[in-house]
Image 1 (cartoon, rainbow, N blue to C red):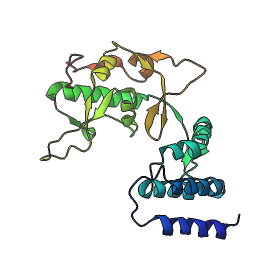
Image 2 (image 1 turned 135 degrees about the vertical axis):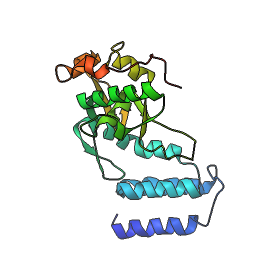
Image 3 (image 1 turned 30 degrees about the vertical axis):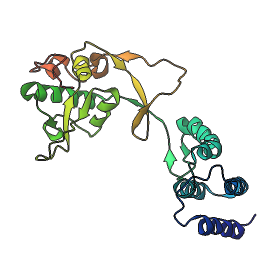
Image 4 (image 1 turned 180 degrees about the vertical axis):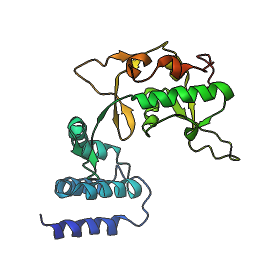
Length: 229
């Protein structure tokens, strides 16, 4: 089927089934013809047009959760199985990959300075007041050691403010360990099956001989449960 015929059929569908249709017609005979049309045309469309068509039908004709499962599940499965080796998103053509991350000594330096300032004031701390050499410290949130401060207060701009978590304080005090690696996709941690178990590390394992642990922790006077929920 050539591109002109495909385009005409899509235009015909949009023209005749648009019109602000809001009621579901899942049990209507018209639905059968729509599904037949989609089944015939879907394999010939590029990923962007597939997504646009499904969105249009979902918004104007009927719920299409089952269509997404039927048409997109195979692409989704193939997509995620390829992520670890880098692949292209089937719907937007963007580069995609699962990244294996480990916590840097710079992030540790940021965390201990954050805890030090927080222990003195019990207030959120702006990142510029913390010690760091590079901007990789946001990785702390992947291990749940620190988080950006969220507040409903509108009288102050809280952008760039951080607080340590209870877990982060316990880790800094070498009371608990964390996984050496986490895997992230699109900036968020995801669970994936790996052949090797991820080793657990204490803070002293990560800093090694690069920093003096006693110096990093000097001036910190805070209990493990001093962070508000």
